Amino acid sequence: MEKPEEVLAKHPFFEGLDPSLLKVFSSCASYVRYEAGQMIYKEGDEANQALLIQDGRVAIEIFAAQRGSLIIETLSFGDVIGWSFLFPPYRRRFDARAIEPTTAIALDGKSLRKKGEEDPRFGCELLKRFSVIIVERLQATRLQLLDVYGKHP
Image 1 (cartoon, rainbow, N blue to C red):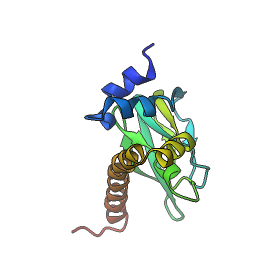
Image 2 (cartoon, rainbow, N blue to C red):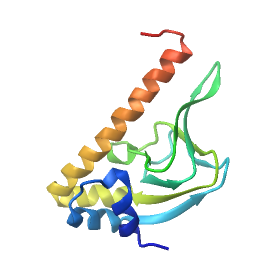
Image 3 (cartoon, rainbow, N blue to C red):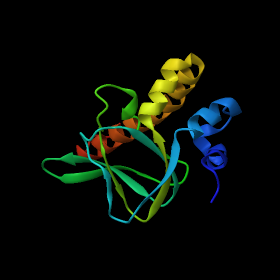
Image 4 (cartoon, one colour):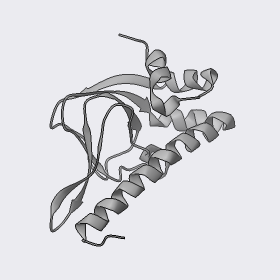
């Protein structure tokens, strides 16, 4: 199995990243695996990591009282799950469920926050890269809500 740093270097999330900053990210990385149907986390859970999908598929869901769970987005290789570890109160804002067997690299959120506070250059890069994920997730949620309520632009 490849070292996390080698895998991270190939992941689209880290494209163009300075190798010295990649080493910081990789120092917070470990491998995780989820079985098909396994709940990865629920809305409101403590947010202490981000996941970089290596293979498999994961559904990002919200619960609607009248309709049950709604899939906001389905993610696969190259996608990142989890940005809530960056912002107090460090709680998940969506549910995530493995649709099929999924492997990912987990980035320890507490360590990333600490390293970002210690090194402003790293902290700025961390926020820039995760801001893209936040915008993508909010846009996907917006489109799903338009679909749910039948209002289209």
